[in-house]
Length: 546
Image 1 (cartoon, rainbow, N blue to C red):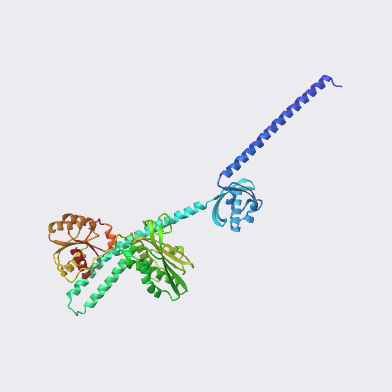
Image 2: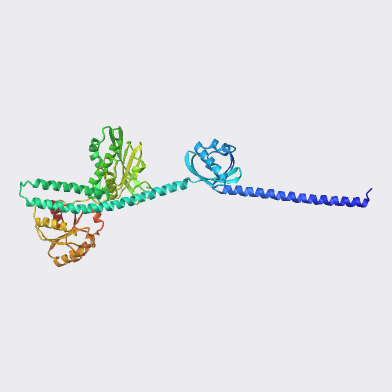
């Protein structure tokens, strides 16, 4: 039998051990409680973080089952949570998108961080999403999804604007080239036409050579028309500006346009009442409308189809015209006349649309071109913009917006034609041109009109000659484009010597382009190269009569 003291000691030891065990269990329970609390806090923190992010996060099993999701608004989801939780991606996503998800999931389970961009229809709207697949366990991944629709559309708009600017720069470069060639070409034609005129004057009446010279003159005129088309493309066409009622122009062209349609095509004209006037060249505007309707007719081919020509008045907002071309056009805000020509013909693909304003690009047989290029030049020359929408098999819509003319204070008046049958009065004319052949041809033409002629090959030489003979010179014919000191710089120097001297500017460019370089004290008149003897007589008469 144990000693009672020993038994007591054993009991006390066991009690102490039990107390220690209880304390240990209490500490473990407390630690577990703290750990569970920390886990709940971290879970709540993670949930709050997920909800704070704009992204959606899906936990997906190896077999594609969607186990959970976090964050985002339910409106952002492709389907409500109850429609996809516990189901596979094949159950809830279109088959092609689901297959892409499974390929990305398998790669993520191998340790990659995989990105997938795809499109889904959410609430009737196509949206673009970016998903990033990240492994969290051996058999699970997170798919973190972000709606990048606005970013993608913004980038598409940026790239479209960049393409428009690049196209505008390309056309501007081509326009400068075409304008330069046309200007030089007109100088050559001026020489050819002048030589033909001089040769014809030297021949007796009834000479068998006269018809040939008349043919040369006719062909020179046709070549000048081609040069003017190139100038129109460059936005420097030969414009005679006046206030034009586009509705009246369309009414005048209507019968001719209908006669030129394809056999099974129809033209409907819709013009609003009380359209504002536009300031432009009526001949060029006729060409613009005719070219566009002709193109629409050719797009119909042999098929039955309809063309609608519509005129309306619209308010232009420069901030809202991403589709208008050129994108850098300085079309002012305010009322504009909108010309629309819509057909339901064959249409064009995107590649063709990107080239339609290029000179000599054509989908027709070889040798055609400059149609839409000339249209673009006419629109640009009138300070307007143009937009073309088309799709293969769905037709084409061309829209041209031209600024309305500023309200006039009074009805414009035009000087009556002077009597060209009377004598021009003679005197000395200073002829200034850097082209030697132009001077050699125009000088005898002026002599044929009864003038003495002195010449100069440059602006500085013209100033020297004029300073020496200012009292004798009755008129100066001044070339606009010369190296070094051009016509716009020479004119003020001549007027500084004698302020009342009549100055006739000669150029292969259009008057509207040339006039931009001059101040209020501009030239007395303008003559477009190439010009005939009669045109030269008329222009000299006009500037001399004041």
